[in-house]
Image 1 (cartoon, rainbow, N blue to C red):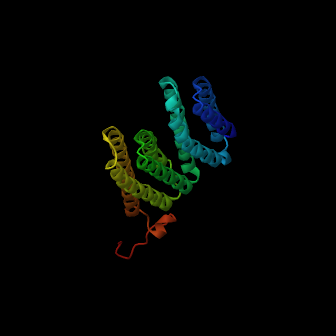
Image 2: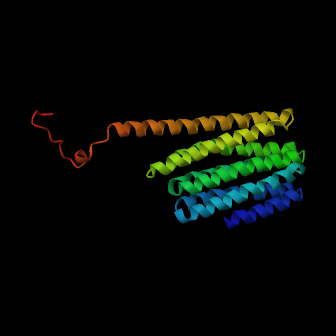
Image 3: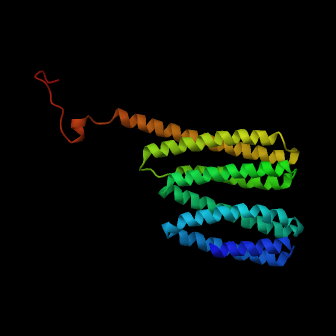
Length: 245
């Protein structure tokens, strides 16, 4: 991922210089590097955590690039947006893969990143920069919906841990919904539409978490009612008394 970081530096430099052709070329190279990095990490588990960390930093760096891209032609801005969306998708894929191997770390990083996206949006709003806040909220919406895939991928062999992590994701979604409602009170009509979309997404994701929690409780209840007696578990029959009971 060092190649992707270097390409990001070149992309940010050319965007700041309003060099649209060079920025577009850098964006294309960057997309190819991301695709290659995902294939390599998928085949090498130790690289996965490093990949996720690099992608998280890359996604944070996009804030500055998109902020500076306003001087570029609209066609180039759209291509930069596409590159950012690819980075978001690759990061979510990495988090989903992590959830199968190290679920606690995957949930921790997902929770931390989505919370920081909302903090970033609030910071832009304090500076009266609604356009940048809107872009951050668009990214946030993709992440919060992607959380449903992360929760589905959580490692199954530690049931109690999975139950706790699902509850943690659900609690975080409720808290973030509250933050979004506060943000909604600070924005104008145009950005309010994006906040509304984000609110709908976080509520939908919260409901998905709740449904998973309910399903797991039902399965656990069913399993407990049909659990064998200790002497039956070893393949033994229950002894009867003289009356055959």
